[in-house]
Amino acid sequence: MACGDSAVSADNTFFCNYYGLPAISVPCGVDRNGLLLGLQFVGRQGGDGHVLSLAQAYQEATGWRYTPPQSLE
Image (cartoon, rainbow, N blue to C red; front, side, top):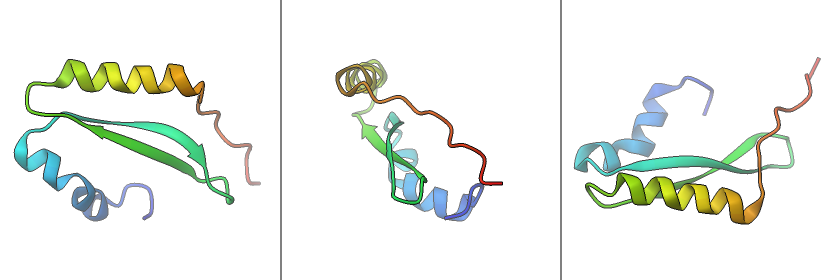
């Protein structure tokens, strides 16, 4: 999927959008080509605070932080 490819992105988020479920994506690593990998947490309707807390707990527990890759030039 290319950045900004909204058609593919919509396929990945349709379920949450359709049912009004809170969701958040957090960075969780990079692949062997240096592309950012993400992890998505989804909650039940009205569970926005729980989803945010879960994402924060994940980031604190793993210590993983995203550092932009060096220029490819």
